Amino acid sequence: MAVKRIIRWGLVWQNNKRDGKSEHIICRDCTPALFCTRQDARNYRESMYGYFRDRPYLRDEPHGWRMPKVVRLRISLEE
Image 1 (cartoon, rainbow, N blue to C red):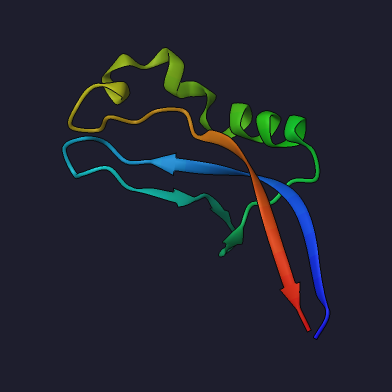
Image 2 (cartoon, rainbow, N blue to C red):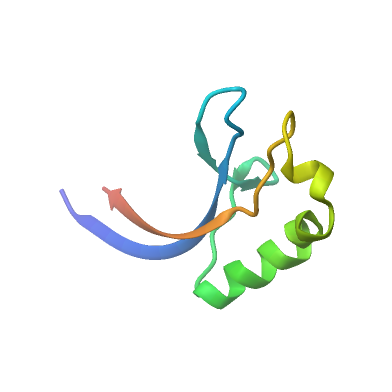
């Protein structure tokens, strides 16, 4: 069985304290949003979620939204 490992970049969404802390990978078109470079992931985050910075009411509870974190993903493919 051959195992191929690849590194990609993605975004992790963190829920607010009121609902209990949870994290999940942000998806685009029902698949995880994966990027080849960290900068690509940061650019996508800025274009899609950058408005959170300018809207304090979204950062406060009950929303508690924060900018998604850019994370490195290690993906293993098995054949």
